[in-house]
Amino acid sequence: MKKYLAILGLVSLSFAHAQGGPLVINNYTSYDFHTRVTAANLFTPGCYFYVALDNPELVISGGNSVSYNSYNIPGTTWKVSTSSSPATLRLGSNPSLALGGTISNNTKWVVSQFQLYQSGTSLSVGAVGDTTYTCNPVPNIFNTPQAMVEWFTITSGTTTSTYVQIY
Image (cartoon, rainbow, N blue to C red; front, side, top):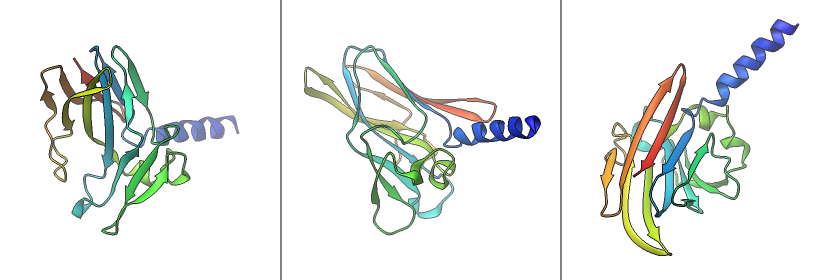
């Protein structure tokens, strides 16, 4: 029985990272980084299977870092599209967006659309992401007058961590 529970626990932990792993945003600048992120299924034709942050945008203030393991970010609303029909809005707490669910199991982080702010003033805009995502092509490095924004992934075992670095 103990072995069965141990195996069950390990299996559930592996499903916990099925969304392609955590999204880590490190802001090494003095500017506030405002972003809307998107996750998608790279193998679904037609660019329909995606999840995009609708409201509010994530704000990572200068000198800070955050890590998100799922769409269950308190207070967020996501646009979810699984077909050619218009996307539907779902709260981050919606069970369909939970780790191990159909949506998180079949998507990975692909794009960060961003703005850099200083004292409430928008300075620069841009986007970075996975260059293999052809539905919304963006570079993996974007230079602004204020900062360089970089997107990359690191895979360890079956977990792929996605990083957005602001220098």
